[in-house]
Amino acid sequence: MSEQQSNEPLRVDTDLMRRAISRLEQLADQLISAGDQLQNASESYGECWGDDKTGKQFYEQYQEPHSQALTAAQQGGSVLHDSTEQVAAMVKAFESSEDNAAATGSSLSSGANDT
Image 1 (tube, rainbow, N blue to C red):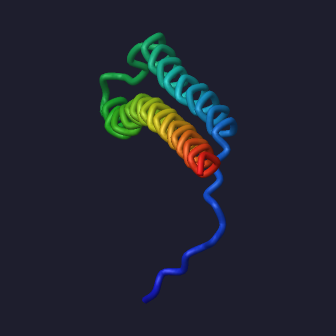
Image 2 (cartoon, one colour):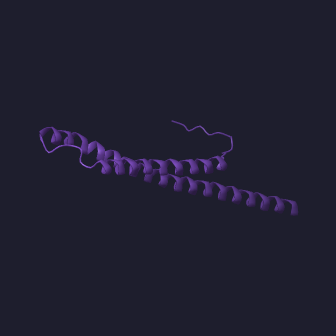
Image 3 (cartoon, helix red, strand yellow):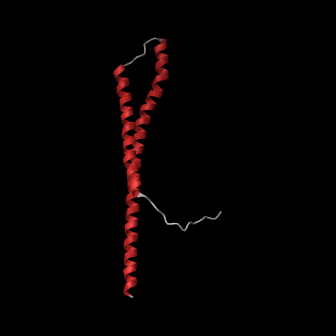
């Protein structure tokens, strides 16, 4: 299988990526906050099931999904925070690459004018 190459230059909108970083951070914070609110609300009600057979059956059905929802909120928020750091590193790398290319192009231009 052959690879097709484009003659188009690579274009990256780092300003748009920066705005995405901000939005990802907001989403991460909202997700973590939602998990915290669920945990606090759940704790404020205490154990709302009885000590009888029905209460124990309810708890068996409730405990695992509840725990999973709390874990998902915390881990999801953490993953989004990590993603923002990775996108920020990409922005920095793209901008550095662009600066280096501009400096090299300028250096080549001035060298060509000297001859």
